[in-house]
Image 1 (tube, rainbow, N blue to C red):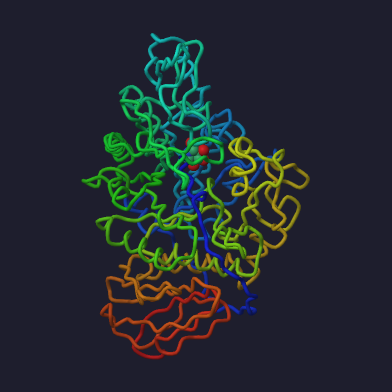
Image 2: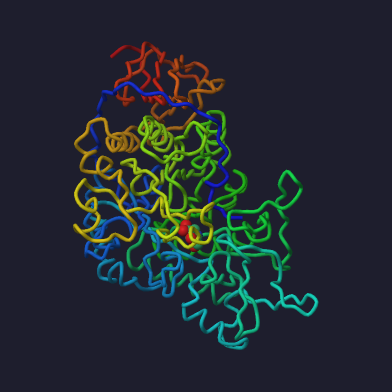
Length: 603
Ligand code: NOJ
């Protein structure tokens, strides 16, 4: 089953009304120094990690594809935003079947993104701005063009014969069949016949992405050496791709089918019978690898490198295991359970955030709402039928403020995606012939692929949105929204999405309660407004309230229940145009947000 969360959304009908014009109250963006990653071993706690999809961030050489020098030229923007670390999706040499997630050399840079000297320059320039670089480490599979796979496929006896998952066919009535019913996340059987070896190999993703055999100690050593190599080049951590999928059932058992209401197996967007991935995902063997890898990265980096996991898991209990019983595995497994709820459901958000606060044993949650595999946060905006609406509609910015506030005003490390801060909208292709992501080509029209969330960054209203030099054909089209949704315009506009992000991110960094204070839910019987309290070690208390509905709401905050004294609120940030609260009573407009410090008087 494809572990890309969005497809599971089932949403209720919401009706939109037009909102009143907004006037902002504007706290200044922070000018404080970001704590340096290189001297602080727990720099990643309460930090902001910004994902860049390098193809789409900034093209410096006019080939229509973003590159490393382009990223370096935009570091000032990231520093001003308040970013602590940048996660780069893969920039290694690759045939680009899966746009870099099919790696053919783990210790070099793909020429279309630049050179190793460009990379070192990026790391050095980022460091000057107190920004660390996090590499994407793809451990589960390589490209079929990697020399390891070519050698492995060359015979059953070569030195790397056992580096990948090779299996004999199952013979049924004299016919050759794959060993079992496992399916690829990207469509079709997960087994590919190799005529030279007369065997199948396993690929969780594309045919061109064969899975490595992690039971082989040589594979482990080779990959641990890759991690050491990049730490020597100054990276401050790794995002571990598909990390829960490293191991498969040693007995190759069939996975159970997921049945529909008619009792028959459900069919996915690719036409395959859906299976529950109990034998191909989250097997316990992965923990041994995580402990080893953590030792390697701790040793090579002096304890400063962070391991971030791509961890779409079934429950908070499963997530907790990824930190390791002795806190010796991942520092930051991604919590996909909050950000990918995919509907503004107050009780569900309350429960999941509270679970992260109380059921991770005090470990740091990593919340994430957006990445290069899922529609952007505008998926939370629904049309009259209750389906996601990617257009630029009346409540777009209001919902964006809600999402940004949940992300940055919770006790968490926050992961954001390029374009989020300006409110870039998901722009899926409308014709099959325009699709670039192979899963969109294979799954069209039910599965349109991931191009919609990978469009070029919108820097300004000029030609090519400032992404490429004027007149260049960019690798994906620039969405029409760039004329108004862009960095330059939003820097000028006091009520813009970008200004909200700058301010709420500055509060996360500078306000002690919002930076590190414990978190407690307030008014827990309210199904319309999610409100919570952050309490700093020195006693400073801040309340946060987000209206999850299109109707105005009134809230009387019950602070006494959390043992907090206070009769008034001092506004830190609120939806443009909203009134200041009277005592502890808030008036929130449609999708209105309020953040304020608790005080004993009116000052
Ligand atoms: C997860 C990555 O985020 C996605 O983009 C990629 O296609 C798969 N893993 C396979 O590497």
